Length: 304
Image (cartoon, rainbow, N blue to C red; front, side, top):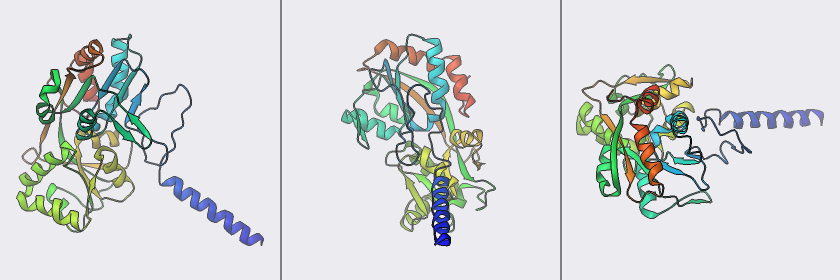
């Protein structure tokens, strides 16, 4: 009886520890708000791509998701420059999802419905141009390039984009349907290995499940690599740079310029912005010297 009880207790503890370990790399990777009750439960109640004050915000910003790492410093810097704004709500979902949210008027995550219209929407240049009639003002504020994120030590020996086409390599790939980066990576595949490489990764390997198409790549790709579900994933350089910055066990494989793609990020102030002055002030801030310094801190490049 005593042995059986000890065995049951040990099994329970081992099960608990294994389960707990499964979430050791989970977001939110940003610093949470300190005021009030914090009830973030990894794997259950955890919404890392929604930030700030959802009730009566003075400014609402929809950021392209891959900029989540910049949010803490950027909003802090904005509030220091414009102290009249104390309640800001921001989202960092994929830009295609954010565009659909604007078009439909709301988004539902779990049991929560959000119907805020943004004052400012940021995305890659092509998407801002696509929806140009939404905006009263647009600005270029940062740039980026592609890299390959791999597991610490690079056990799969990934050296270049062509290696992602190998049958033995499991990759995480942004879904081009709603991730702007997905289309840009496909362009890089064609540059590196022709249409054949793109077909192999985006059709053959998707079919045999060695390419996993993500729903929100700036979260899923690093998590799949950190938890050993994928061995590599093409990402924006800033995303891999940030994972290294917070000491997660990944490596960065750089892509040569001749095969790489440059992204240009633009912010658009919506014509229907509910908080027009706040939108103008944020647009001014994001292209200011201080705003650009914050982006450079996290691996982005700017024009100055």
